[in-house]
Image (cartoon, rainbow, N blue to C red; front, side):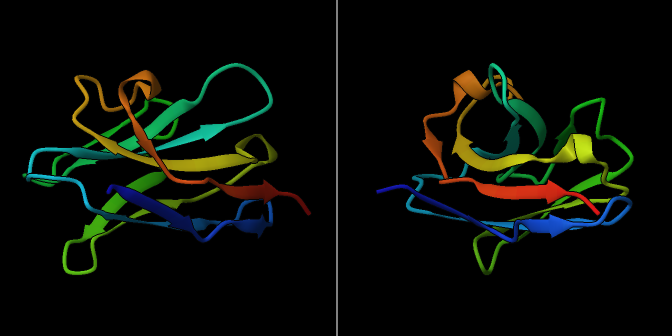
Length: 123
C-alpha cells in the first residue's frame, strides 16, 4: 500500500521561508518521481518541483525556479521542499504526490497523494 505523508506547513511571515517534508512508503520499484504541488482557491493543482527517485534529477516550474529547492534523504524515504522569499500569493495547501508520470509537474499524472499541508503567508 502506497502511503504519502506531508508535514511542515503553518504560518509564515512575508519574506520568510518554508520547509516541507514528504515521506513516501510502499511504492514498488526504483523508477518513480515525487513531486510537490499546491492548490489555491481555484481550479487545479499547480506543480512546483519534482525529483526522480532513480537518479535524483530535479525539475522546477518556471515561477519558483531560483527560490525553491527540492531534495531528498533516501535513508529516511523523505523528500523536502524549501522555498524562500514567500509572499501572500504563496499561501495554499501544499501536496506531495508519487507516481511514474510522463510530466512530473502535471497533477493529472499522479495517483498517490498526501493529505496536504496548509501554508499561510501573512504578517
